[in-house]
Image (cartoon, rainbow, N blue to C red; front, side, top):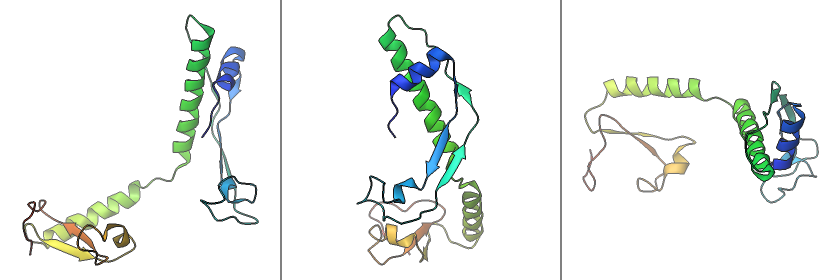
Length: 149
């Protein structure tokens, strides 16, 4: 994401309200600049998320160049916070995964491994022999170079 420091400096100098806005889905349009990365669609779903307004205070610095740079960094921080506020949260998923892990831990032996196949298994198939399985380790990690049951 390209953010120019001059825009932050103008917002700080004029004490204007900054409205962070996140546009999602525009990269899939025929006008997007990421043609090799994303598949283009004629009418993609575009989501606009408008976050609460903020102000950028005029930074205290001796030189104007330094003030402009500091205001630009503050604007960059606001835009990155807006990006993270819109991002989906995985807290509920992680709680459920932790719960399943604790249940499975009760039914496993020390240093036993469990095998599970699924969508995440393809990402890890190089770790354990390339068979497309996701291995879960319970009650401690295995020793390096040691065989496991």
